[in-house]
Length: 153
Image (cartoon, rainbow, N blue to C red; front, side, top):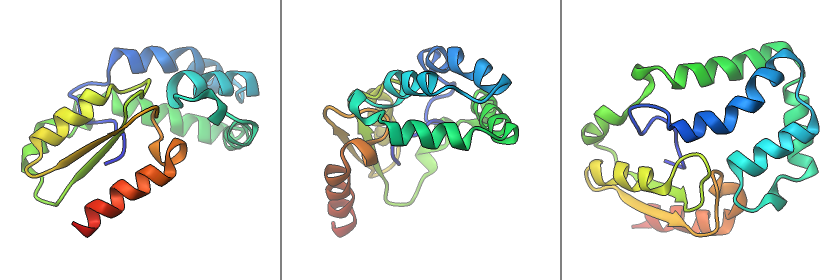
C-alpha cells in the first residue's frame, strides 16, 4: 500500500481543501499549467522541484478531454462516499502487507498509514522522510529498497 486513500472512514478535510480550488475550474475548462503546478506543489510533492514541466505538461495534456476531467471528478466524489473506505475491514486482511508512506504527505498524514498498518495483522509500516504523496517518484530508490526488503523477508 503506497500512500493510499480509503484507509480512513472519510476523506480528510485537509485533502478536500487542497483539491477544491483546482477541481471546479479544471472541470469547466482544461487546467492551466500554473494551476497544475500549484496543485502538485501543494497536494502531491514535498519537494516542489518534482512539480516540473514534464509532470505539468502530462497532466494538462491528459485533462484536455472533458471526459477525463469528468472521470477525475467522479473518482474524487466516489472517494467521499462512506462505502469507499476499507477502514472497517483492515483487520480482515490476510495477505502479507507493507504500508509505505511519505512522512510529509500533504494530503494524508503519515499517522494514517501507521494506524492502518497496526490494524492489519502482521503488516509492516515504513515512512520515508522528506517525501510527499508519491514516494515512488520523490524517493524511488528508497521506496524500491523498502519494497524489495519486504518481499525478500
